[in-house]
Length: 115
Length: 114
Image 1: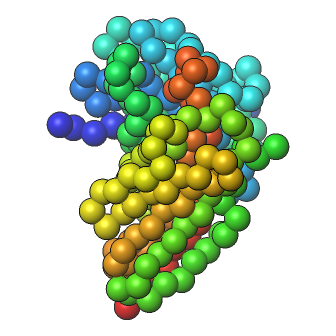
Image 2: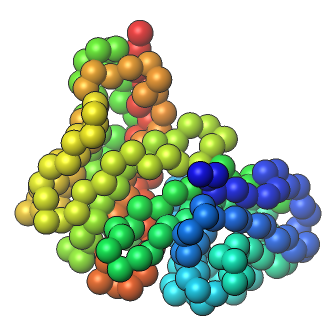
């Protein structure tokens, strides 16, 4: 079974631009979560999508948004990029069934650099 | 306010010996705990998990222990191998919250010396 895939793997943008990152979950997984990893803050939860609906959102400004499509693929968007948005963005998928525990499986991440 | 803490940023262990990684949490609503391993430039890899109804879960060389009263969990790796060298993250979730949000510690870098 293929794992979680993320595109692109690397991205360089300048301040003020916007960016869209893509995530394809493991086949059959309906929940997709996004995390930001930085050296200072570690892994921080951005948001979770399930059945095309945002279920929870972390403590990030409104510049960070996302969506999920009917095939469970997800995108996240960051508008008006700031230098501090430079990070590794990780997507994780989960079954989210009634008897499933919260085991999330991560993709390789997208390394975003804002200049 | 860090709800999941890994107080040791790094740990060095001889090959063949036991590695013990520790994690403390403050949120009493957390009821499911996971350990992930991460190599540079890769996403975290799920290792092992434990629910709050258990105090021990074992999978091969990896064992996780949970002490609910102390709000403490630990990951034991026996025997340690050089390939285990990586950053290990402890994570926790509150299944009653209806969200699959994981709260992570900041990680412990394990170095296994041949």
